[in-house]
Image 1 (cartoon, one colour):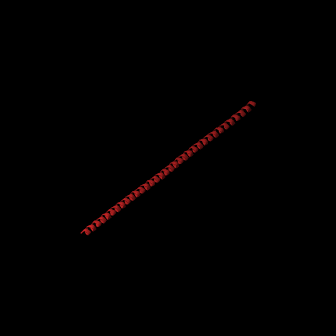
Image 2 (image 1 turned 135 degrees about the vertical axis):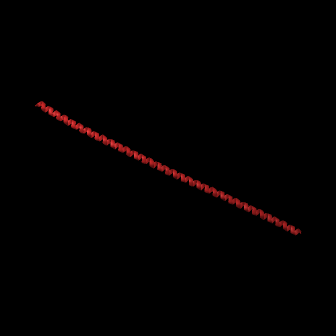
Image 3 (image 1 turned 120 degrees about the vertical axis):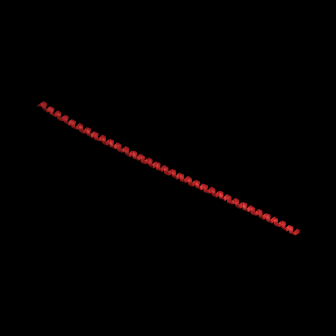
Length: 124
């Protein structure tokens, strides 16, 4: 009976030791699993953050590029409009100058003709 009691005692000790080892292994496995899950979750979160940051950066760059393009188009349109206005104004100014020059030329010719006839009449 002593022998059986001793065997039972050793068997129980071995059984308890195995249970503790199994429990520790399970705990370690769960800890490793949880740590990996947290690590993976953080990696996914970081990847998503980088992706979102990159998307925002590109969206802002596209927005800025479009704003610059629109601003340049507006500037070019205004420059063309101003250039056309200046060109039209110069054409009108030149036309008026020609008209005034032509009127002055005809007025001078009439004045010269009148002076000439006046001189001829005086001489007669």
